[in-house]
Amino acid sequence: MRVIAAMSGGVDSAVAAALAVGAGHEVTGVHLALSPDRQTLRSGARGCCSVEDANDARRVADELGIPFYVWDLADRFREDVVDDFVAEYAAGRTPNPCLRCNEKIKFSALLDRARALGFDAVVTGHHARLADGELRRSVDAAKDQSYVLGVLTADQLAGALFPLGSMTKDRVREIAAERGYAVATKPDSHDICFIPDGDTRGFLARRLGAAPGPVVDAATGRTVGEHAGTHGFTIGQRRGLGIEVGDQRPRFVLGIEPVTRTVTVGTAEQAGIDEVVTAAPTWGGAEPELPFLAQVQLRAHGAAVPCEVSATEDGGLRLALSDRQRGVAPGQSAVLYAPDAERGDRVLGQGAVLRAGERQPSIHS
Image 1 (cartoon, one colour):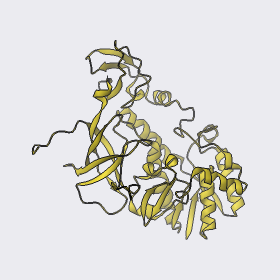
Image 2 (cartoon, rainbow, N blue to C red):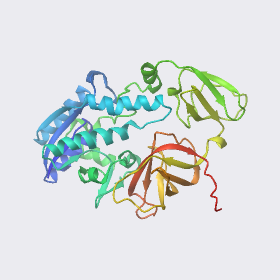
Image 3 (tube, rainbow, N blue to C red):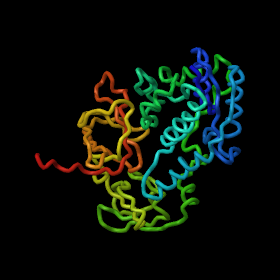
């Protein structure tokens, strides 16, 4: 096949490109320039997409003897990922920018352009597997990225190759070292790539400005603090609340209301939910018949929990959870996996979380 290898400059994409060459594919390396100021986005293990990263990717491409190009998608990245991130926080939601980047950049803009140029697929260094066209978890559970890929459609998965999903991260680094790649020991990028200093609250404050308001304790009904902007909070947050509640029970963020600028906090008991409602889902294969049983992962690094999936009247999904959960934030993705132990690593699809709360008793119960 003629394939594009998305080469970020890290060890994962370098080894993925090398494995694609070794598998006999006709490979062209592409580095995505996603920042208008690429000199500022790398600081050790933070950030990505810097000139340093582009040069690291180019060196690996040269060693592989494959063509290499830099594609400037900075405007698209700003509109679809950065601006979306800011707008979601302004609306009181908590987005996942890595998921949005996979959906809008790597498997929309990049894959669409690759296909337009006559390529068959895009190779990436994601830690996930494809088996019979189905997205599966990586064998390395600690590095599994199937959650942030759960938004991909069957057509996008058909144009994807994930060579690393059947090996551990340690093995990836061993392969890079065996080949003499300088990136073999390069640190993984952490946090949000376009916030290299890790200060998400400061980044949002600079974009959205100050919008002070009250922090209200649902347990007592009292105002227990003031904040500089609702964008500094996310559902389930426990630390950094800046409140005085008068007792020893920890408080968690329960609600964010940007219009009234109110942040509501409450106890652990109040923070638990057992029902999630999502927007219209995307499916990685044939749309399953509703209702059905599944496992759902509600955060990028959360554990999957059993649930019953049914339809809402407006085309979304209602997930009845078997165990109460905390920290389920609107704007995050609810990624559904197969329910059985043997094939429970298989991704079915996902829906963006609209709201989470207490399950209402059935009128038939």
